[in-house]
Amino acid sequence: MMSEFKHISVLLDESVKLLEVKPDGIYADGTLGGGGHSALICSKLSEDGMLIGIDRDTTAIDAATKRLSEYSNKKEIVHSNYANIKDILKTLNISGLDGAILDLGVSSPQLDTAERGFSYNMDARLDMRMNREDSLSAYEVVNEYSEAELAKIIFNYGEERFARQIARGIVNARQTKPVETTFQLSDIIKASIPAKARFADKHPAKRTFQAIRIEVNNELGLLEGAIRDFVDVLKPGGVLSVITFHSLEDRIVKQTFSQLASGCECPKDFPVCVCGKKPKVKVLTRKPIVSGESELEMNIRAHSAKLRAVKKI
Image (cartoon, rainbow, N blue to C red; front, side):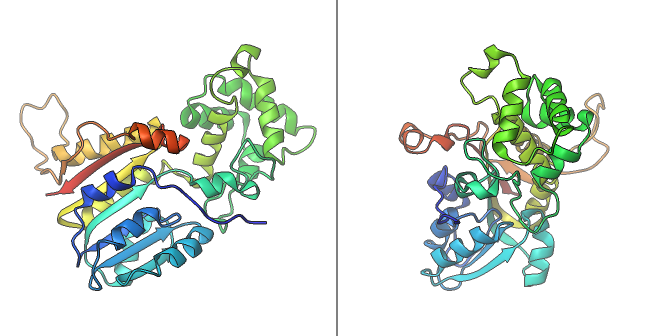
């Protein structure tokens, strides 16, 4: 049975404060989730203000819609991917945003609901789809990708040093029968790595599960383009806040913000700029904002969170 969608928003006050919410402004939450960030934004909006909430997960949309119903501002809740922001605004006939927030990664309810197949701590059929209408799930990745493809995504997306051994272990196991559940996959991973590595600080399956989840949901493939599109649709002075939960996401956000803030894309050895591109944003967070001690004590998933933000010039 599906559990209630409850999620503690990380860096809630910090990320929304950066938006400098105007009562009559238009704001987008590209990763609506349970509506935590959106609720705080809505609490600052008048009846003339608008919140556009976007999520791939219909369970999250249902929960957030109910949560946000108490606020009197205008709302548009959209079942889509945040990477489609330009098409979403076009459909809504909205020309620009005063601010936006992206809280990346998997939500607590997705991890904690066994049947979603995200967690190595609960046995369920391999799934990991944020949008359950998508055709590609973790089952197809694990059972249909070649050994080379598996090794590549586990190494690149999981930063797992035993990627080759794990990929080989998966391929060998599925020759006997398909790998169908999270516990089956976790056991294969444990058996594929040196005994000493099984007792490290992190669960031995953590990096591989992260890698497969990123592949299933194309989390990194869409991120840079989405950031650029969100900046394009911001009004001058509008702010984009982005919260990441692992180094791969943070690196993309940091590099994209830096490129948008520098403008010029000429090779570094060019004595003068010839591309003519001007800065689009000002970086508001030279160093990422991280959770304080009180939040870390309350929410274990806040430990890896990093917040970066830019303001449209």
